Image 1 (spheres, rainbow, N blue to C red):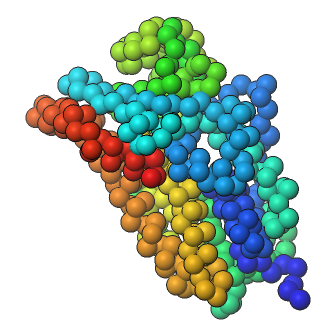
Image 2 (tube, one colour):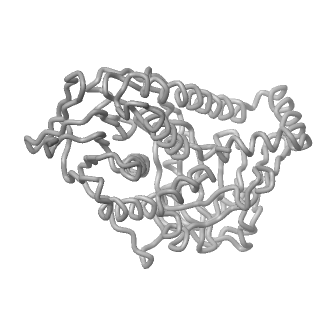
Image 3 (cartoon, rainbow, N blue to C red):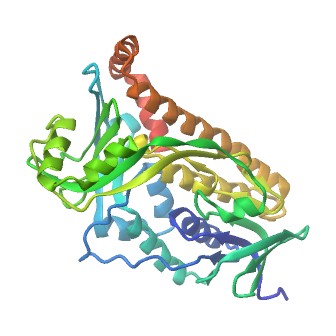
Length: 392
């Protein structure tokens, strides 16, 4: 008989990615422990829409459907977008994407982080194959050959054949394993708020490249738009603190009043931005997923989708292991090969686009205008980009 504290997999971190990973592995018949410092805040339809939202790509929707949580999320409060309009303030060039370009009914959905976590947490509590350790924090870990030990702050121990770190960009577990991370802190913060515009958002995600950064208007289910505005920190702070009337006018000007005047705003908040890439994704009986492995610029809304693709790849790699050992070296190497290159290309690609479109160097402004117009005119190339973003 196996000890009660011996698991096939222990997942540390119950954010969107960690919770999805624990649930997906349990649904494959594995015995899973999920360790989290604090339970997620409950979501309630009567609450104001959370300021932290994510753009959920079709690949992530497919994962949530397999986990039987997507219907609850969509019926609660998910804003579909079927079109995307992107334009450059420096040269007037624009590009339009339609759901048909990616071969689906929608390009994606704008959903509150807290709603997704709430739906996953409820599913986890009902899942017999998952043992929740919350509140609990990992303070040490050791490799014991055929298993890894996690020591918790309540003096408890968990033994697992594989430990998965989904504990965020600062990942204490990544540090405990001595895995370095490269990247840099951007000289930008993201200003976020929900705004009401004169005209409807038309189920369209709008994005304008500006010299200071990117301004996105993302369609919410209640008819408003969630804004994500990348700005130099001092300018971000100024816009967060100015009076509402002035803010609405400056925001409208920056957005070129594409949806008419901005009529109202929620509270405003700001978050620092960074690029982070772990030097490796695996160690003996150990794997990194989500923000613990990579963090990217939000201009394309790919952050959480990349993490959920990590989940798909890890679950698939474990399923391919003949001995059904989730922590086998071949399994972990297969997972790392599949995800590290894609995440690295995505991270540096977003970084390059951010730098390119912030530049005010006239020859570069002219050249990127030509590029945008060319991509918009080339149907097959545009479809390829849309399919990649959708995870297809």
